[in-house]
Image (cartoon, rainbow, N blue to C red; front, side, top):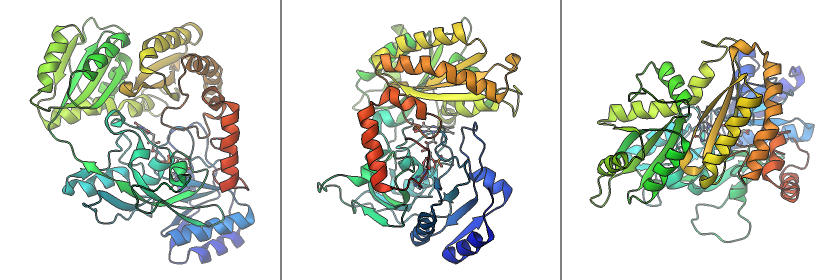
Length: 477
Ligand SMILES: Cc1cc2nc3c(=O)[nH]c(=O)nc-3n(C[C@H](O)[C@H](O)[C@H](O)COP(=O)(O)OP(=O)(O)OC[C@H]3O[C@@H](n4cnc5c(N)ncnc54)[C@H](O)[C@@H]3O)c2cc1C
């Protein structure tokens, strides 16, 4: 859809020196989609405001003319939340990336929503502090996107989700009203917490323009170990022992043997231990833990190995090795995607799920799921990995090139398999989206995790913020 010349003239005027816009086809394609890659983008224009006032003016203009708007962060989302496929205006926050001085006394930092997650970490490090929202896409994702998705990541087991680390939010409603939510108050019991309502709202309630983030001390003296486990049930036994070992656990992550094979190929890195005799049921665990109170993590890990809680283990000996171990885990998503049409497996596609079930049910749930896929969907390759310490599994499905499916046929097959997956999740009292959100791609899954009366309440909230349904339309609800 093209932007008319009248609207372009208005946009120029509204933005003045406080923003830019682009109609360049490569920008329209780049900024109109996220990582999921299954829906083609088709935005009318990409707007890059530089100030909150400019955001407010653009939103008001769109509100008055009933133009739908899609807020866009780093576009690392995996549920299609930032896709603009229906001629919407995309509001990219990427030029709003200013970060203020770290406030050491209150342990906070004020940033604009377009600040990149990793840039916030770098900004706070010299003060010995960090914003503990951390995952593989931190080099591209933005604070606004992290808040809008209530991002999880690799440190949730220690720090919890993004929502715990947001003190205040500035946001703009569809009609241009600017909200300042919660001031910079740690304690503020004055009614509904609208700030928390925006966390995880996936750009459907308001556009986040700034936030004050809570910080915590950087933790040092951490050890990183990799464990080779026979199967998922051994992973859970290892986790149980880790839970009661007495040292603080910073991360407890897992990847299946198939994922390890993809990431070693992708990184051109050797496997960390001998994989001889390791079956397809195998899993690797990455554990990061902190030496504390005279308790040496690696001594405990030796005990674990001796008592049969893992088949093999290696402990990183230096910072370089620590990052190599982490790379094996963090590159899985990219490695599985890299094995599609762009590279080794031309003609293959990826469809992904991000689910959670109560930790004690993980083994039974996975067994049931894998058996179903193997029996009814032999054209799928399944990759299981994720934040196992939070009960969170990423289930990536890739089409086998030999099956020769078109993208449309593959998506259709995946959608047919979804009903089984969602039903299993419901049976195990899990969630159809642990951390990536519902976006565009998981909308039909929502009723499996949220009852009709809760969805009706959510629709009421949406209506209160955005009665004309112009903000990120068609997403989440
Ligand atoms: C390799 C890889 C690993 C990942 N690992 C994790 C992980 O471990 N944990 C996890 O939780 N996620 C993970 N993700 C998903 C993704 O990185 C997160 O959801 C992230 O928080 C999205 O941020 P973003 O800036 O890229 O948002 P986008 O993808 O741009 O947008 C996501 C949603 O937020 C909305 N939005 C964006 N900015 C704003 C704003 N300023 N105001 C209002 N709404 C806005 C969009 O409309 C959209 O609905 C991963 C993704 C990749 C590619």
